[in-house]
Image: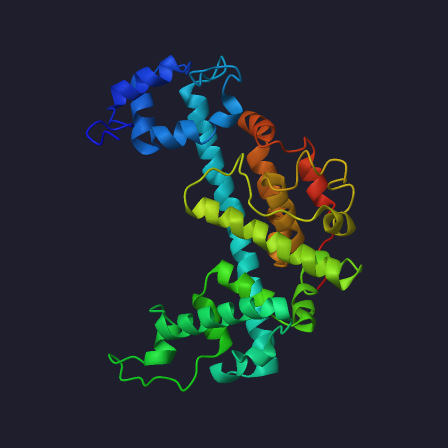
Length: 333
C-alpha cells in the first residue's frame, strides 16, 4: 500500500464542479453550485441519493439526464425537513416508552436501585439470562457513571448549592439519561406481563386484540425500526431512500396492520425496512393525541409539491401513502 498517494485527494470547489459536470449534473449557476458544495458538501449531495438517480449501465456513475444541482439541493432540503418532522414523533414515542417503563418499574418494584434493578424482577428463561445480565449491568453503569443531570444530581448532590446527594436514584430519573436503544433493551428484559402492560397502552395494540405474542413482537419490531431510523438521522445519513436494519415479521405485521394500509402481497415491495415502514411505525405507536392529529397534515404539507412527487418515487412510497396512513387505528383515551 502506497500511503504517500491518497485514494481520495483533496479537490477544491472548481475541481468538484468539473467532476459533477462529468457525471452529467447540469450546472448553470457556478456561484450557487459553490455555495451548495460549501454548505452541504459534495459527499452528502451526491452519495446521499445516487442509488436512485444513476444510469444503471454507467461505468462512471453518471447521473440520469436532466438532473440539476438545484434539484439535488432541493432534495437535500426536503430530506432534512422530513427528518426533522419524523424525529419529533420518534422522540415523542421514545419519551412515552420511557415514561411507561419507569412508572411500571417504580409501581411494582420500588424506587431503590437494589430493588428495581434486581434480576428477579426480569425474564428468567435460560436463553434470556445473558441478555438480562448484560442490560442490568448497563443500567447500573449508567447509574454510577453518567455525568448528566438529573442522575448526577441525585447521585452526587450539588456542592455549589450545598445540596446533599439523594439516597437513591428512582427509575424515572435513571431513565432520563439513557439512550433510546437502552430503553428498548430495558423493555426487552421485562417479564411478559410487564411488557403487556406497556405495549397495550400504545394505539395500535390498544385497538387490536389478537394474541399477546403477536402484539408483543410487533411492538418491539416497530421500536427497533424507529431506533434504526433515528440513529441514521443522528449520524447524518439520508432518510428518503433509507434502508433499515430491522424489519417487522411479515406474519406478525399481517395480523396487526390493516390490509388497506399495506397488504401482505405488497410487503416485499415496500413497507418492510424502508421509509414507509418508519411512517407506519410512527403512526402505529404515536400516543400523543395532539401529535396524532397533525402527523398526516405535516406530511401532506411537505409532500404536496413537485419535489414531493419526485421523493415519493425515490423513496418507493405508495402513491396514496397518506390516505393509507389515515386508516391506521387511532388512539383511544
